[in-house]
Length: 364
Image 1 (tube, rainbow, N blue to C red):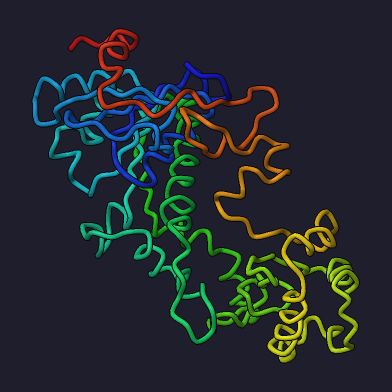
Image 2 (image 1 turned 120 degrees about the horizontal axis):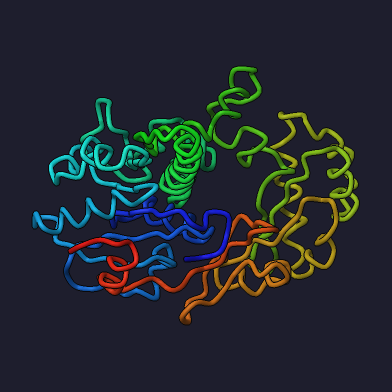
C-alpha cells in the first residue's frame, strides 16, 4: 500500500486504454491500492506503459464464470471501480453496476466513455479528436486559414476524461463515506471537454471571443500571447497579457515602435505580430532566455520532451523521475503532509494475481 492522501482506498480497475489507466495512475500516485484486472493473454512491454505504473495486476478470463466470481469478490471489497468499455459490455459480462452495487452498496462505480452512457452517439466508436470536435473546442484551436489543430489527446482523454473521472471518484467516495451509499459515475470525455470550455463560452457570450481561429487573445491572435521562432529554429513562448508584464516585454525586447503601445487594439495585432516575430528571429532561444527568463514577462522556452526533464526548474522540483530506466513525469499534485509517490513500475499481466487475492481475502 502506498503513501499519500488516498492511502487505504481500494480501487478495482478493468484494463483499458487512454483515460482509464491514466486515472488509475493518478489514484495510485496518491496512495490508493489500485488493482488492475487484465485479461489473460500475452504480456505488454511493461516498463514503457507509464500510465500503468504503480498498481498490481490480476489476470482473469472474463468469459469464465469462475473468474467472473473472482472479479465480483474483488469488487465486493473495493471502495471504487474504473471501467472504460462501451455501454453494455460490463452488463453482458455480469459485472454491471446493478450486480456490483448489490454485492457492495457503498461502491463508487466509475464509467469512462467518449460519448457517455446515453445519447445518440453513445454506442459509436470514437477517439479524443472526435469527442472534442462536438464541444467547440477543436474548432477553436489552430492558425487562421488552416484546419483545426489536434492538441494531442490532452483535452478529451486526459483533461476531459481521466481528470473528471478522478474528481468524480473522489467526490463519490466522500459521499459514500458519509452516507454508506455508493453510486454510478457516468464520465463522458465529450462532457468533460465541454466543461473545460466554460470560460470561453462565457467570453463568447460577452462578445469578447469569436469563432474565427487565431483572432482572439488566447488562441495566437494577439502578438503578446503566442510562440515565436528564434534564429536557431527553436521557439519561445510569450504570455504578456497584463499591462505591467507587457511593459517589461517591450523593454527587454527593445520594442520602441509607438504602435506597440496599442496592446489591445485587435486591428493592430497582425502587423504587430509580424514586427515582433522579426525581432525574435534575431537571436537564438538561449540568448532570449538570458534576457527574459525569470522576469515577469511571462516567458518560457518551448522545450521538447527530450529537453524538458533536464530543464533547471523541472530538475529543482523533481518534476520528472526515472523508473525502471524510463523517464516520466512524477507525482502531481503535491501534498505537503501526505506526499504521494510512484508505487512502482507498470506490472506484467497477472504478475500479482496470487498476492492480491491473498491480501484482499478473495477465494479463487
